[in-house]
Image 1 (cartoon, rainbow, N blue to C red):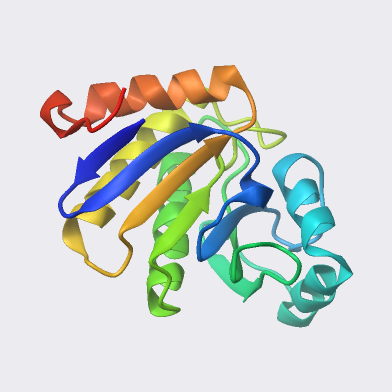
Image 2 (cartoon, helix red, strand yellow):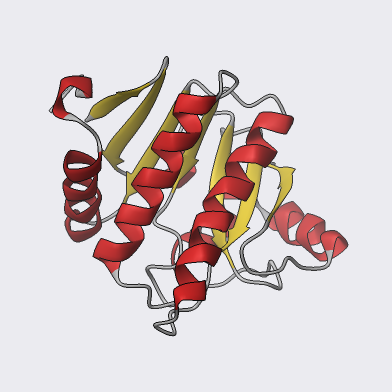
Length: 183
């Protein structure tokens, strides 16, 4: 499913983020940038032990920010480690989640990425409600794509149907139907 955002594309696909043929993949990271479970663990495993060494060199990342490392054994040139908030039902959570997406997009653009793949940041063990997180992610990314020309493709990649459906609903709700390229 693709949506036109200015001159650029926002795409929603089921699949494994570790196998995406893009310039950068986003890791739903923790503040220590250590290998965890879910998407983070899968990315660390697929990239190889060099990723953990690179992350240790960085020394961490505050919530709402991101850091970049090489992709090592991944198809992607870069891994962008974006730290979303743990859900506490506060208004600051939404601000931090939006900031994590914007920080990752900005870092990708600064490193000449033309394509980037995102997971659903903060929706796993961090407990962010899926529907709210999807709406924030879709709005934030679409607005960013409409305002710049460096990144031509942002792909959201989902390992399960529930997450895919939440993002598909958010995209249909927040992106005007005339911009739909595929269904």
